[in-house]
Amino acid sequence: MAKASGWPLNRYQTLALLIFSLFLALDLWFWELLFGSTVNWVSDVASEVLLYVGN
Image 1 (tube, rainbow, N blue to C red):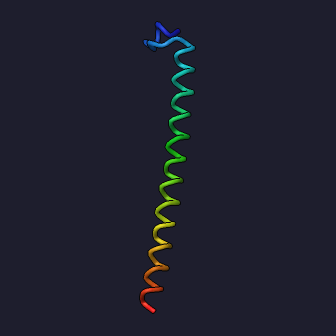
Image 2 (cartoon, helix red, strand yellow):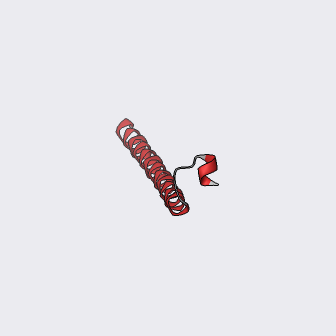
Image 3 (tube, rainbow, N blue to C red):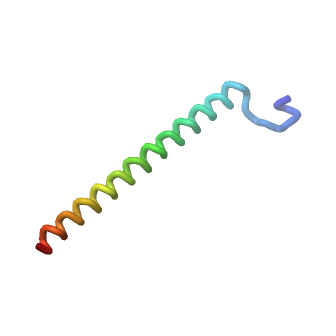
């Protein structure tokens, strides 16, 4: 079936590619979570500093 469809990888290579892709997607999700949390934290700190300096 792989030869008929032109798929160049065997089943183990396909499974490895799928696992690697899932790992990269999960890693990207964690980086987005970390970056979003960092931006929120910096924004909160800047707001508190501005409120403190303004008073």
